[in-house]
Length: 517
Image 1 (tube, rainbow, N blue to C red):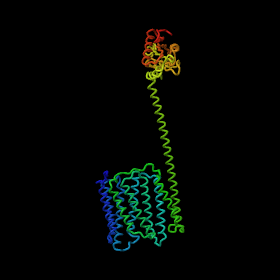
Image 2 (cartoon, rainbow, N blue to C red; image 1 turned 135 degrees about the horizontal axis):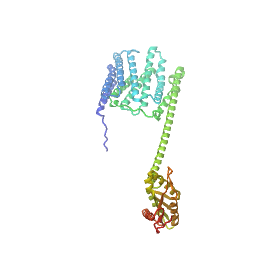
Image 3 (cartoon, one colour; image 1 turned 60 degrees about the horizontal axis):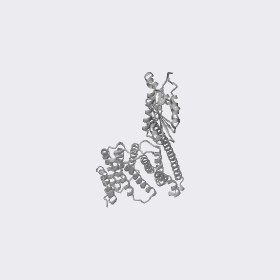
């Protein structure tokens, strides 16, 4: 059986685990103890959060301490309110409502809101309309439930104005906290463990609040301890978030926030359907209550509007991504075309003479391999080697720029006197070569004569000066498969004979020297 290694908690996170274990022990003691003194145990939890946050900030050094100090400041009145509530419970006296404890609790929620807004700005970055719309849909969806199950029942109760107003403030404040929590969830990308604990604190806190006030409004029999345990667990999560070392790391803002993942879309649609479901099942006789129907319909209309705006953002995002993809495709196509043109240019430069544009020695050798390997008596070919006569005098007297003009003109004259399938190459300096395919010796003689005739007219330079340059030609008729090196050597031998015999004439390798000028 394979051995499985179970990773143990790191020493750095030992404080988190110790804090969670101690808090869990307090919660268990609260549940199993029957003494009235147990009502003071929530004070231990809420007060411990203040110290946990201070220790966590000093130990872990988060990027910004302001939100955490606001949370610590919020837990101080929370602990004080828990103390007042616990003392009344220990004495068996009904807690006055609204009283000092309620003001302390509300002060706590205001500080929670300030801390969360600060944290959201740091963790989620600048405001983004898509994330705000998603948070708005979640808030209005939860607001629909809060209205149907908490606020509306209280409004129909016989409570006096001041206690009623204080009671309604609690769920409204919870909705504000929920909107900030939703923004944190929807606009952050990679979430740190500390941020996950913060979100968990908020969700558990809001669930405990909703359970407590919902059961009071509807007179549902649910043990009060369930909500109290929820509040204690939420406080432990906040303290653990501050103690966790990941509080020192900044989260990444979610990329492409306009995207609407399928899971999020399902949640948003479910929240939008809450209103119709409440009306359909006639929760608490809502159909017979015009005010409730008006509020629910208004919330449904607002939710639908937000969803339409969200879909519009999604469509705009999809269009933007499509445009971006098309731009990238066009850029890639242009880049590939440019690369192909560059490759073609490099290939051309590697096989052609930069001055005249004629084939160079490398391309000539490649073509010779192809043509000479299939030569026969039935399908012969010819190779001509040319060397200009008097070209050195042009360079010496008129300069190299004049010599370059002559070489370009020579290339043009040679190209004009051969067929398209023939090749004219510059081997270097004033040496040229012509490969004529599919011609017999007689035709090769005619080609040689046309080449010599091409040099009868003088070359006119750019400044109007005319120079007369001739050429010597060495020819080799090829009637059998021949290696390129052999053909070049034989044609060069013939050229040497032509040069020796005099200028402006040609010589054939396989025949005695003849003047055909």
